[in-house]
Image (cartoon, rainbow, N blue to C red; front, side, top):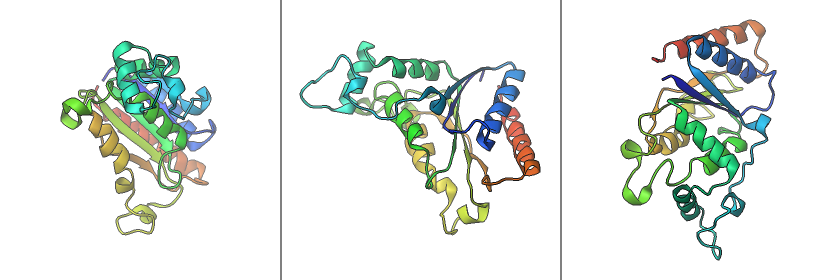
Length: 216
């Protein structure tokens, strides 16, 4: 996996997430990998899929997002900011999706990135059955990296927040695997809120070790 795309959705560069991103960049580039970063907050990425994403509308009477995506992908007429992200995904062998857990899910800006960039006709074709093992992103791999403010026991099976891995299943399975990606087990940093510097350093080292364990 020579080419890596990190889709990063955390608003504060000086946060633990910012430190994890910096560590990933150093670790991966030191391995000789080509790394691109989509810093969604830094880019002020538009998070809302709407008709403006499709300058060459297939149907100007009724807005059908899936149909417009299929048409835009087929005619190479999608909005430029989406097209740029699609090209990053095309180049990537490994996608790293990094974000803090907010209300047991991903930040809205990241959901918007998926809504707009993971377009019908690019990542899947439901009509022809090109989903899951036949998804259009098959051959690529993905790693989800999250920080959670609460301790691990609150996110354990039967815990008050629910099993974090099940909470993330709509992302890891219904979205990433649905598109054909091979998804590695999620990397989680618990107790991220107010984490002590020594603990943060340890978590960064663990993350670097995790990245080094992913075969090139």
